[in-house]
Image 1 (cartoon, rainbow, N blue to C red):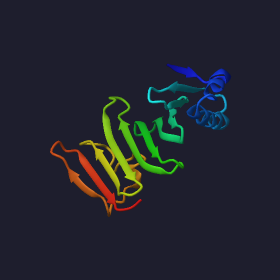
Image 2: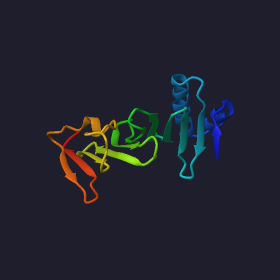
Image 3: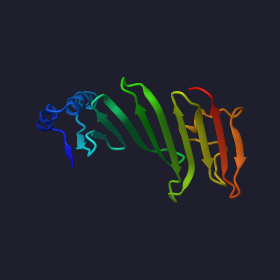
Amino acid sequence: MTVKVTKLTMFRNKFSKVGRVANTNISSLQRENQGCPVYQKNLKNGKIGLLLSKKNNSDFFIVDSKGVFASSKTENKNTIEGKLYNRVKGFYADLGLVLRKVEKSILRHKKTGKIEEKALRYWSIDGPIHNIVTSKFGRQSQFPVTKIAKNIHSGVAKKSVLSNGDVVYLEHYLMP
């Protein structure tokens, strides 16, 4: 069950190692985002989920006894081009070192709500970086506009056209 974090919730957390780690994260979230409620859920595997929700963004953390295990930051914006959805997921080691990161962006047309552009960027600490951007056939824009796609280098990216007319840009780097 998800509950809003109160002083009673933080008191109950003091009786477990995971709860004490969660309390330090809750305190820092409340300090950084005053006035925004923090929600907590005790998961079946012994970990704790923390949610900080604002009007157009939300942050979700999974905390275990060693610290933050995984995080997800979601952002929704209305832009000139359309509605932009962006999610960044991070997976961490014991000391807070990022092991892997996955970022996904979707641009929807304002009037029709159909997806015009999808972008995916993922990397791991010991592996390559992959950027994959798909633009729908007949788009007004000549080049992708999502946050991930703005980082694509036109000289490095491979451009291919799918059978339905969608354009795919692929970019790979060996090390982050």
